[in-house]
Length: 265
Image (cartoon, rainbow, N blue to C red; front, top):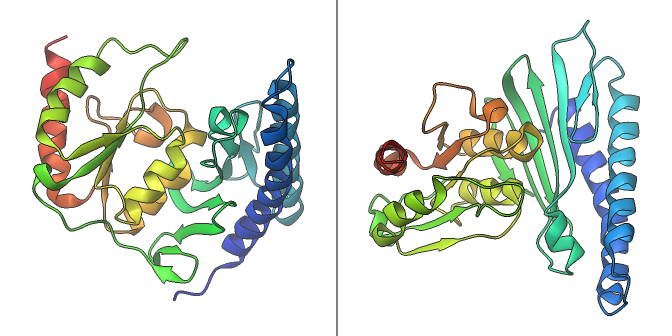
């Protein structure tokens, strides 16, 4: 196993601290499902508390680094390093008591991802990587799957919902679904990407992601030997949001399918 750099030690400790706080709150959420008010306000507070933990831990260790997050971005013009954080990826799952959510921390140098951590507290699964040293799940090295026939592959995606509509999704789904063994929608992009890195999924695609959704997961897939690209534009997928991640055998096949679906709209 590769030794973790000082930056990775900071990232994993921050993710674990936020994750433990969320795990305590998740137990309360399960009890709130039956109340009339529901757990919405409680979950919002839990998310805010987890972000505060991440900001405090990361800023204390690296005060010169910027921080990019959904609620606010702290720019540091004198540095090229930026933490890209999602304190609770899978908020809807958390809200409904579904045990599939994670803490995500990416580290970018300029517009390039150089490290990533995705922590799933319920299973105590810490996915981590650093550029040039590989990707790991806890102490075990990760590699993307070796499957090269789409008919054997399990694919993950994101399904549009209210406020996040996509006019192309149904066409893309109709293009991909008949070719593959199955399609999953689990509700946490960082874990979808981590699962591609671990070979649990063979590929993942989604449109209109934000940087904090994808940053750490993109780094994981790349370090696990996979390919990540936008499938309709020549942009950086982390910062522009249309992402296809897969092993290298499948990438062109899926890119062609999704691209053809896009051109029919």
